[in-house]
Image (cartoon, rainbow, N blue to C red; front, top):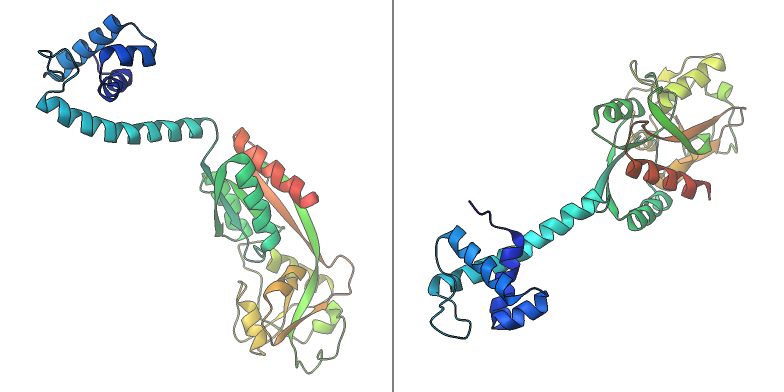
Length: 299
C-alpha cells in the first residue's frame, strides 16, 4: 500500500492554485511527469479521482473540490503543529515551571528578569507559590523545574544545583502604634522576648520561620505565639490588626499594610539568603535559564 505523504498534499494544493501541472512543476522545481505520477499515486490511495482529465486545463472533480478545501484548511493547522513541535524540539516555546516561597516577594525586579529570560530563551514561565521544603519535593518529582527558596531546609540538597541570588537583612514588622516600638529606630532580638509572634516554625519544614525560631533561641528565648498565627504573607495583616509582631525579610517593605512598619534588627547574622535551585540532572534549557537568572541578579 502506498502511504499518503505531506508532500503529496502540498503538490496537490500547488497544482490547483497555479492552475496547471506545468506551472506547479516549475514552482516546485520537479519534473511535470514526476508531479503527475505523485497525483496518480494520491488518487489511488484515497480511492477517487481529484482531477477531471477530459479537459486540458486543470479541473477538479466535485470530490476534488471538497478535498481541496478541506486539505488546504487542515494543512495550515498541520504546518502550525509541525512548526510548534519543531520549536519545542529546539528548546523554544517551552513552558518552565517556577515556584517561590511565600516569603519571597515576586516584585518588579524579579518579574522583569523572568520577562527578559523568556524573550531571550524563547520560552514562557508558570509561577506558583510553595514552601521551600515543598519545592525540594516538587523538584524531585518533576512537578516544577526551578525553585526560589529561603534556607534552611530539612531535605538534603545533594541532588540539587544551588545558586545564591541575594541576601537581605531581617526586620521586625510591628504596628505603627506599638506601645514599645512606636518610636524605635532599630530592635535587638532580646527586646522581643515578651512579644507575641504571629508566625511560628512549622514542625516539619525549614524556611524563614525556622530561621527566625533559631535566631530567637540563640538570643536566649523561645518566641511566644500570638492568638492567631500565619505562615504566609498574611502575617502582615495580623500585625496590622495589632495581634503581635513578626520577623520578615526587608523586601516585605514593598507589601506593607498602612498600619505596619519595619524596624531593622541590629543583631549580627540577622539576614536571610535566597537561593535558586534545580535538579542536577535537568536538561540544558533549564540550566541555561537558571544561569541567566543568576547572572541578572548579580548584575
